[in-house]
Length: 134
Image (cartoon, rainbow, N blue to C red):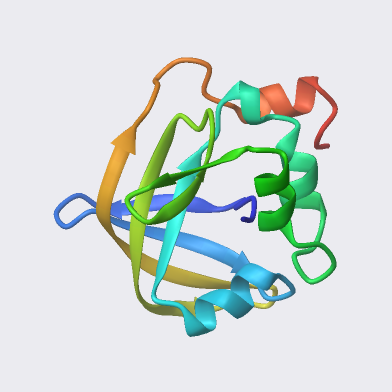
C-alpha cells in the first residue's frame, strides 16, 4: 500500500490510467515484478492512514501486517482493499511509459472497478486542513 501523488485517467475505452511511482518505494520494486495493482480512492475515514501509507517506507515497516493487525483490510476481487475506501480499481500493468528523474510512469488498464461510496471522498484539501501534508 502506497499513497500515489500523481494519478490520471488517459483513455476511456479501454479505461487506462497513468500512475507515477517514486523509484525509492517498495511499490516501485513490487511493480517491476508484479503485473497487477489496486488503485483505491480513500474516504475521510482513511485520513489518518496517510501518515503510515504515504510517509513511512515499505522497506522499513510491513504495511500490510500493520493494516491486518488493526483489522483495516478487506478482500475485494482478490485484492487487499482498505475498509472504508470509497472505490477500488483493479489494474493490469501494460508497460512503463517513461522514466523520469524521480518517478516512473506506468500505464495500467482498468480490469475491474467498484464504487463502495460516493460520500466523504478524501480530498487534498482535507489533508492540508488536518495538517497531514504541506
